[in-house]
Image (cartoon, rainbow, N blue to C red; front, side, top):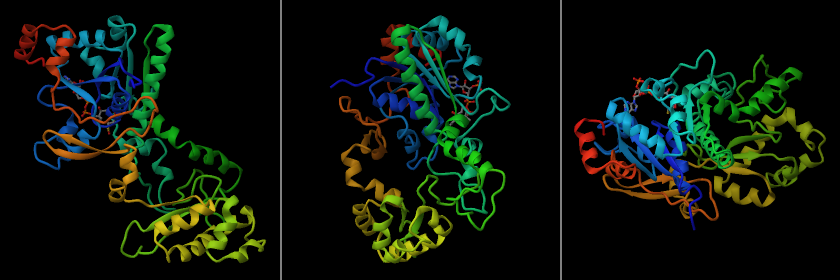
Length: 414
Ligand code: CAO
């Protein structure tokens, strides 16, 4: 079985999280990803949040599997000459430096096209063209500027960021789709193109239901939000606690052990089609004949009371017992799983979603494998490279002689 992106060469100028998630995904699909890093320094995340002294951090190892590492000073003359050869050699270049950094090195889009008209040049930036386009951006800044933070949190409380890295990894995913789309286009146009994705745009795309609600708000209260019927709505989509955000009301309710276990909770969705079974399971058959309860519309002003009643029942069961009882009744629900539970979940190990990898310096560690499964192109997860581990072999591949490699090394270019 061949890898789907076998033969595609990626010049990976990415660092931190957003860009590396994109190139890691392409590497899992079989692309040859050449990660270019500053000599002696490398991607800053190698040294951030280190759990073992002087060993590449999990931050780095979990974002850079299946890649090769080449050290290169792209600001020196020798380094620029090698970088030019790499642009000739590769199909795709990906970067997520601060705005203008590649231009300052002398490699703007026009120059890259001159060197290789088939090159696809992909970038992540914090913002698209506009008042903030020159700003540096990290994950939580993007969550705040893309609409996630203003719509996340308890009602009447502060905006919240989420642990899901929708600004970084989310934008990396968007960019990867842009790259494979441009590769497909190149297969018949013969030409490369510029691919950009701003983190603000990526987050907003993931928050589109909240822009939907912004417009619904002009026509009346958002009846599935906890503010309805007694609270007030302002001018903008408000925070909604754990309300489902969809047409089927949902909430997080306590399960047995919640007093001591911070994750003894379950999300329950009261989908109309399965409501009868749910009502019976929690001992509320009376709701089925009661006009205050037996239609979704009648229940809307009573959602708080409804979830209180559901919780009285879930508090008598573990979150997994609730799963076992409600799923056969077609009630969509999901236990709040801790990272420990996920790390130990055998089915995730079997599918390769959680993978154990061996690293020469840190030993074994867990990482998240490719969540996208292709039937004919399995994605094996290999460890991340050491800094500059593949410098010599890559320089040979692009045509440098042993003497040229040695001279680049003594000039400090690699
Ligand atoms: N050789 C020589 N110089 C190199 C190099 C190499 N191989 N690799 C990088 N550099 C240089 C860059 O050219 C840049 O130099 P100049 O400032 O002189 O142009 C410098 O290293 C640092 O780049 P940077 O400004 O991107 O790095 P930073 O740590 O200051 O900022 C970040 C980091 C993430 C805020 C910024 O890169 C950014 O806003 N990126 C776009 C948005 C993004 O992807 N954010 C997500 C990050 S993950 O949370």
